Amino acid sequence: MNVLFLLPRYSENIKDSTLEKELVKEFSNQGNKVIVATILEEGETYFKELENIKLLKISCGKYYSKETTKLDKGMTILKIPFLFSLKIKERINEKIDLIILSTPMFNNPFLIKKLRDYFQCEVLLIIWDIFPQNAIDLGIIKNKFLIKYFDSKYKKALKISDYITVMSEGNKKYIKNIFRIEDKKIILLKNWAYIKPKLDMDKEEIRKKYGYSEEDFLAIFGGNMGKPQKLENILSLAEKCLELPEVKFIFVGNGSERERLKKIAIDKRLKNIRFVDQLPREDYEKFTSTCNIGLVSLDERFTVPNFPSKTTDYFKLSLPILASLDKCSAADYGKFLEEEAKGGIFAEAGNVEDLYKKFLTLYNSKDLRKQLGNNGREYYEKYLGVDKAYKTIMNIIKKD
Image (cartoon, rainbow, N blue to C red; front, top):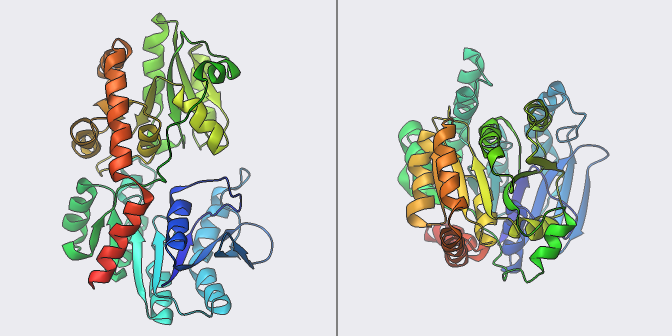
C-alpha cells in the first residue's frame, strides 16, 4: 500500500523520535511505501529519500522558529493548504492508497478534499485536539466570527475524512455528540511508542550529572510549556513544598509560557525549581527515569477532554504520574489513569491543597510509587506499542 503522511514536522535526524515519526516508520517497516510531506520554513522545496521513506519538504514560511511572530504563523497557516495541494500534485506521481494527517495543522477541508479527489483514496485524520473549543476555553479566541469560521472548518474536516482517530472514550463521545459524526468512522487509537526494554544504567551517576543527589525527591514535567498546561498550578505546588527541602521540581522543554513561568519562580523565590532546555531524546529518557514522579498538568478551564501524550513516556520509564486535571479530563483521562492503567493519581486543577495532598500521598509511600510505576510500564508493554496502533488502523481500513 502507498501511504502519504502530512506532518507539521519530520526531523531528518535518525535519533529524533515523535509519535508521528514512529507511526511513519512502522508503516514502512510493515512493507508499505511511505511518503511524508512536511513543512520547510526556509529554502526551496525539495524531495529526498531517508530510511526507505520519501520525504517532501514544502517551503511554506516561518512557524516554529523562535523569532517567528504571530503574523508569520498566521500567514504560514493560510498558505499551507494551497502550497501543499500544489506541490504534492507536482512532485508525487505514485498512486496513493491512504492519506494520514492530523489536527491542528492539517484539518483543512479544502486540502483534504483536493488531495482525496486527486488521488482517489481514503483519508484518515488523527485528532490531537478539539479546536476551536480548546482555544475558546482558554480565552485565546474570543471573536464570534473567528469562532464560527474555525468551528465550521473543523466540522467540515471531520465530515469529509473517511476515518477519524481519537485518544480516549471521552474524545469519542465528544466528537460523536457535538459534531454528529457516525460511530463507524471513529477509531479509538491510544498514544503509541516503540516498545523498548527497561533502561539499564547507573541512576546515581545520572543524577550526579545534573546536580542531584540520591536523597533528592525529583518531580519532573517534560514537554511543551504552553497555556493549555497552566503550569502555574505546579509552581503553586512547588511553593507548598518549600517546607520539604529534598523535593525538587524540574521542567524540561520549551514553550510560549516558559519565560513567564521562570519569572514567577524567581519572583516567588522558588529555589526548588529548575528549568532545563529541551534534551536529546536519549538523555531525556535517562534523566526522567531517575526521577520519582512524572507531572501532568491541564488548565482547569477546559471543557473538552484531553489525553496528555507525555503519559506514554512516563509509563515507558516506570514513572508514577501525578496529574492536575480539569473536571472534563478528570472524568476521562483521570479515570483511565487511576482505574484502567492504575499508573498514577490525579487532583483537581486549581486546587493547590488537593494537589499537595495527592503529592504527599506519593511522597510518603515508596511502595505505592513503585506499584504505580510498574502498572504503567505493564500497560505500556501490553497496549501502547506502535505495532498495535498500526494493526488498529489497518484492521479498520481492511474492513471496508
